[in-house]
Image (tube, rainbow, N blue to C red; front, side, top):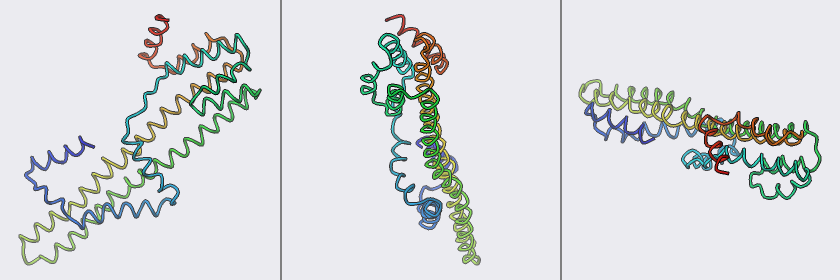
Length: 253
């Protein structure tokens, strides 16, 4: 956001444009209130109430995702299961904070078969992805409407400029002001709303990768695969840098 604002401010400085041109109530009304109206017409109140939480997610720092730690945890659980049996994992399940991980491990302890565990966890992942995509689509919609509303605002401004047709100086100022709505529409659509939607989708993809790791690890554990094989399978989810980190930590241990 800061870089985007700097780009606009820099362009205005280089072109010797006064910042007061943005103090245009008509343009602000058309773009911001118009975008809000379009989104409200597109989504139900249930979705709209989530906007505050979504803005918090967009602007808050990402929680440190440590896939290396996740691999170690799953391998440790597999080692416990190999030594003491699956029933010994009941205590481990209570120690896990991640509700998705805890649910999968509890299903295994309860004796569910492999396909049932996989199906339940994948259904939960699909439901989560669908909810997240719906949330992101609110910003995608705003990004679609805002530039078009900017064109409408420019038309309003040109209509107003026609009232000064006998005074070329006033008419020129009015025409310049008319395009402020277009600038605001393009800026909010392509620097704010569409990128916000993309950011939410990227966060969802990161979360799905971790959940896939959990599913594959738990299913392999339930099948009775050795901790070494489980570790090798989960290593495929790690980047080159993460694999080096895993090897360093393993060497230290």
